[in-house]
Image (tube, rainbow, N blue to C red; front, side, top):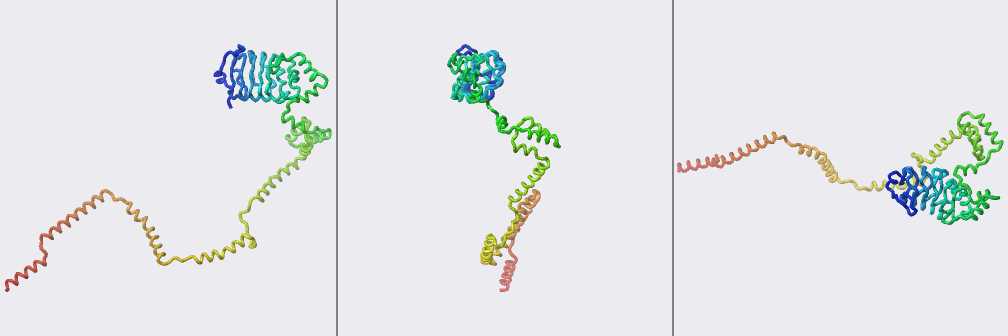
Length: 372
């Protein structure tokens, strides 16, 4: 909700209006409450608060220089009772297009004795009967000369005084301009007045009261002088009965909550439809289980082997994951190179020296030749 702050007042437009009054323009800021107007330092003769969201006309501090107040196009429903006391030179108020609905709401304006011009066009009260007469009568102690941009004549003043100030005037005021009643006052009007017998009963109850709270409650009823019959009977009941009621009520609530909450372990009777459906479905389920084909021996063996491989696989992964140290790797590489060199030398030696079998054959062959 935008607020009427010192910063907003300082940033707002300031200047002379067509009537050559020094004016502060605060229109169109969506303000809902009139506040902090003392920040203007009483430097303006006119203040424009039009086109906002003001609900109640009030909260204006002492502004001796203020003469014109523009509050058109707002949502004003009520006028503060103390409005106008701190503005002694206010002579023009524009309340056009607001939401004033009862004629009694205009009574606080009768305290603004310097008021000369007033505009209430566009408010619901303008459609009420005898609206103009009542405004003239309610503001008879002011200097009002123009109402809704129309001059007030002496004949208008005389007729307003005769209608609301003559014989039967008070009845007409109650009929056409009833006072605004708060919610508390409306409830009090609905209550019954205390009879002498009810007063005596309440006094006897005060004498028999055991606690300070009871005494204060009963004394308050006596002071107000109004209470309904049912409330009176409830008030005069002894404290023992009230305590019993208060103790019984939580037990009842607990029992109700237990009855409403479903029990977890519910025993199903054999005759119930759920039990029958379960019994009917059990043989079919057994038959389906018996009909299910058994696993072949080959398939079982393959499953066992796969499970054993899976069981072994983590160990092999762990053994592979172990990386050899750099020293052992060098030793292994050296041993491998030595074995390779020995194999090469052996192969070369075999290729140079003849086999022993071939030597024997050659020897035999030479002896035969000598003999022949």
